[in-house]
Length: 234
Image 1 (spheres, rainbow, N blue to C red):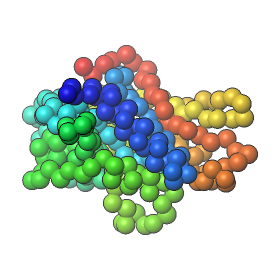
Image 2 (cartoon, one colour; image 1 turned 90 degrees about the vertical axis):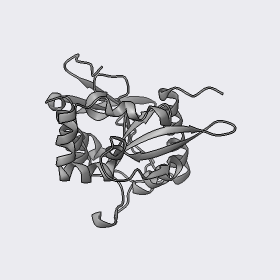
Image 3 (spheres, one colour; image 1 turned 180 degrees about the vertical axis):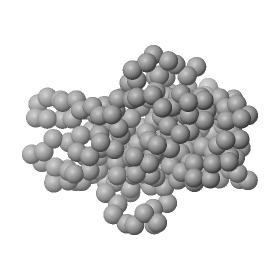
Image 4 (tube, rainbow, N blue to C red; image 1 turned 135 degrees about the horizontal axis):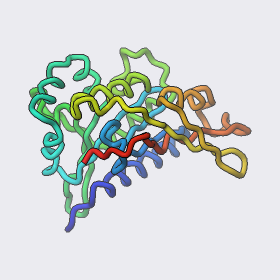
């Protein structure tokens, strides 16, 4: 039995996330950057509302080590020596991968820093548990100390840019455009912003359940991103 490609694994995750959001009656912004000039800064996928996660995807467990190849020895040392960055990574940056079963594959996730060999252990979790935790975060008003995963949009974007600056020696500081698609009556509208936090403000101000959102436009994004330069990570 063949192994699905990385984009198929990512697509399966997004589909499962959408199903669970539908069951719970919540909207989950999702920003897909895989194979774009921005994936070197923001990774493959950024999801969340008031609290967000960055997700990387690998085709299978045996390819996890290839992520470390993107880092120089000096960059890894800088990451390892940055305590605040490692704390942020444990809260809001995961690497997902597939593992074969008798009739298909299962999806698992681990902390990104652990995948790079930083830390003493590599704790795995099933992706369906990660998805459930993400759905629970939408509209969660509990104190920050009680939240086990995620970062506010501004903090997550700052973390990802700092990480990229280590990995690519300053390449993570370039301007980005975040884009969201909104359903408005029988048509759609597009909203853009220079930061993830500003883009999510309309979503955070709106009601959280479909019944409360009647007669209102609902921001479905962020869904796309672009960068002014045409530099590619690979």
